[in-house]
Image (cartoon, rainbow, N blue to C red; front, side, top):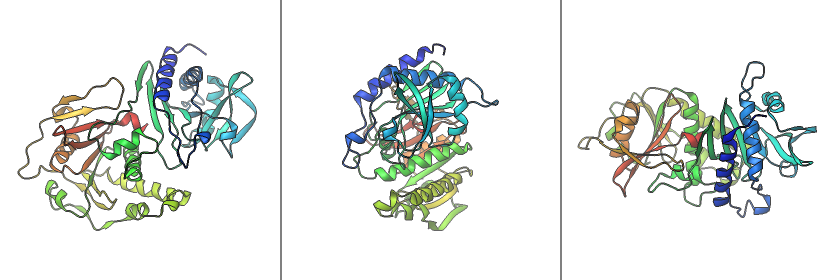
Length: 376
């Protein structure tokens, strides 16, 4: 295995992040059932092995895989190898095709004084350290959520020697969507709701067409003042597929059938954002319209300034003109956030960028949160 200088650097910074902001235990996920924080040498070894494996080829394909620092005792129902293999690029390249599908991880643990891959698992303890290879030289370091329906919390993104450590501070007046991207078990009302928006964001980004989703207050048509009429693809009555799922009992939400149904509904709604124009969803998850054209609200000022923010350590808010944010889709979404101040606009670019635009009342400005580093 060659030397990869960024491995030690990112391992040190990620360990510091884990020690400052560890995943917390709770009544449903007590501390004794949580994964241990790996040592810096463990993180470094996993990053190094994953990086060099990502630059190899197996039958002409880049090995895409996920490594989890987890022992057998915390991975019930795992697929266990009779002979554990060395944590190094060559074995990882050979094993990668078996774990390409989402939700499958190669288990890494110390055996006989060395880190080895002991098998594969779909079950991870809360707060488990995970390294995901998503492209050649492109790694994402994560921690697992408290349940299978949750979003993994990104810790760092590494591309070659470029290291981006995800920040932990919640932006002032940021939309609720942002909170669930920063926290494992958010102690605020609407946490489950925000998780649905996260899944929608990830699905919008995945389809690659670009798109816009406007989340507006329920039981009001005020949003129509910022939409050109008539709305070509307005729904009557609104679709309640997502709303019905989100009104299910809490014990139902923890079942696999419910999660599968939610996944299908999310993909269906996110797919509509590929249509030219914006998709409109109420904050109660009723699908109201798609293909809608955003216009400036009558009497509203033209948005002339936004503040760009990114949840990455050492990044600073940047004031700019909306035209610097992107094309027409971003500009119209910024105007919508300015005119409809109780709404949130989610915008996916074809190049993979993802922006959440919302009005910040304390600063009296539209904030644009670049969050693609949180969605990998």
